[in-house]
Image (tube, rainbow, N blue to C red; front, side, top):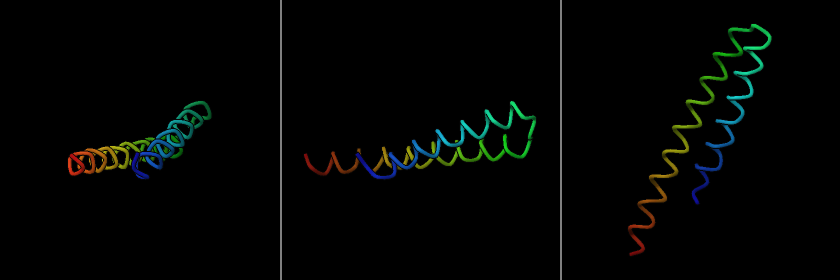
Length: 60
């Protein structure tokens, strides 16, 4: 498993928490920051998945 996948998943979780806290407290900036963190995490996770796929293909 690529390091980017692990870090991306952590960022997604962090973003989800920030977004939820922002929603509960009514803090629009915190919600927006949470959504941005989630998007960044999903992108990094996808990059890690692509790298895993390429690595697996090269091993065969």
